[in-house]
Amino acid sequence: MDATAARAPHSSAPDGTAQEIRLEGVSKTYPDGTVGVARLDLTFAAGELSVLVGPSGCGKTTTMKMINRVIEPTTGRILLGGEDVTRVDADRLRRRIGYVIQNVGLFPHQTVRANVATVPRLLGWDRRRTRERVDELLTTVGLDPAVQGDRYPAQLSGGQRQRAGVARALAADPAVLLMDEPFSAVDPVVRERLQTEFLRLQETVRKTIVFVTHDIEEAVRIGDRIAVMSYGGHVEQFAAPADLLGRPANEFVADFVGADRGLKRLAVTGISVDDLERPPVVHVADGLADARASMAAVGARWAVVLDDDGRLHGWLSAERAHGAGTVGSAARRMDAWVPVDATLKTAFSTMLQHEAGWVAVLHGDVFLGVLTPESLHRALRRSVEGTAPETAGAAVPGR
Ligand SMILES: Nc1ncnc2c1ncn2[C@@H]1O[C@H](COP(=O)(O)OP(=O)(O)OP(=O)(O)O)[C@@H](O)[C@H]1O
Image (spheres, rainbow, N blue to C red):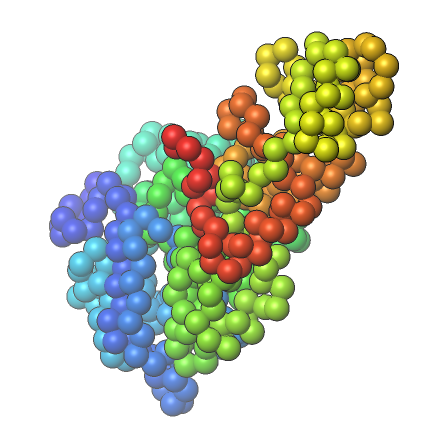
């Protein structure tokens, strides 16, 4: 570590531990009189991914850039881990803050490896440590150091460039990551993949992340908390995705999250065991006569079929359950299942991929019940009315 870094105050968390970011009465008036942000009070919790979302020009980027002092606030204080960022040397501050922007901002004349090594080099890390860190990070973000490491940014796909940008931002293990529309320059399919990968990465690194987007779907998908902003940098609501969708604070938020917020809510609502239907369960080795009796006893038109180990095998309809034979000879295979900690959206898309029109819900190997379009709709309605658990898997006994 060089002399500059060694002088850093201890609150700079050199081990990259996530830190809280607190904005107190922060405003920004540009020299031409435009109010970018007016008196903002906002706290981004340590280790959480907070999303700033809102219409174009509402002040999202201004808010974010004040945190790393690319833009200096006109009034107010910004505290990073309790330390006022305006009292810290701006260069040193930025080394503690990873920054990812749209179109990445990689240096075009440097290889991917050199790009990712930027901050470690500035911090005076030795070559070996830097190289090990760079290789490790490239692998973490899904790039092969041996293949893409020595390429130039122009020789990568849009998605790969974006991954390299994330690797570069994480290189010196910063306490905080600022991300300004990082995934908006790639097509929707790549974008969704990057979001998923990024969420997985955040599970491991647990940074304090401030993420700017104008896309409410993206916000709902990735955010722990979402700040919906209106012009002049006003925060209309700062809440967990499920709260925002289920209980928008006012008309502005309701309009912004959209009339189809019930559907968006699918992505953030977990399965509750109370929502599950419990059709009769039969086993492949059972006789068809017994299976018919089980279905008839509860007036069911079909039964779930489990194999000898209790794993999902498929289903048996009442029409096919005639004659002697075993359940196995008449059952149809079907392996549409989701783990109980999946979201309703995952359950819904799994259901759509299978003709049976239902999806089994498992806890480990244990069959808990099924979701049908009807029970899914009920779950969604209850969730929108605010009575369903809002954390995936929250209602599983013993968890
Ligand atoms: N350098 C500047 N000088 C004057 N006004 C500016 C400057 N930069 C931004 N603004 C204005 O401040 C307001 C907030 O801009 P900002 O870039 O923070 O919005 P944003 O929400 O990030 O928008 P977008 O989604 O379009 O990126 C806008 O009215 C914008 O025109």
